[in-house]
Image (cartoon, rainbow, N blue to C red; front, side, top):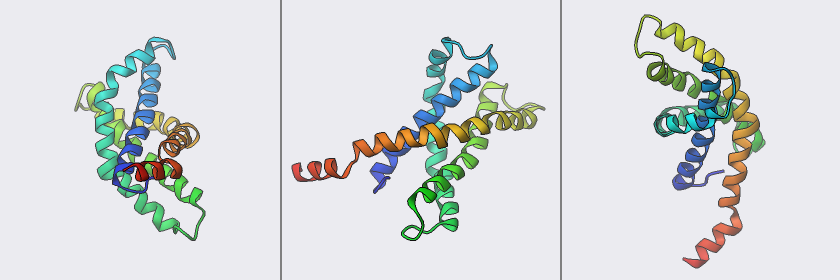
Length: 163
């Protein structure tokens, strides 16, 4: 897990890219005739704007809220780290899914209309199960594994000694 602000930023960028790309693919597939090859390239066109928005929302709103809520339930040093990791992941989805679904509603469903709230609620309901399970079963473990490989203790010592 991240040990400083730089590592936290890298971790957030990695998680945002994995989560946002998957969720864009999912939403394009829902809006079209299911999963098709074009979905993967179409998602790349939306990724830059949605990733920047997700990074900002996660860094300044969802991330701090998720950590604060997780620390109300679990205590580092007393509770198993996996419980803290899972709590942060769950709270992150609880906060990010409605916010990102609202952004998607505004950007891709015609902006503010008389149906904005109902469209947003429908998108949240459709996105939440995918975001929840993708985060817990794929994105979280994958990003933590890759992050751990990049910032392992051994590599950190080598970088420190070289400097």
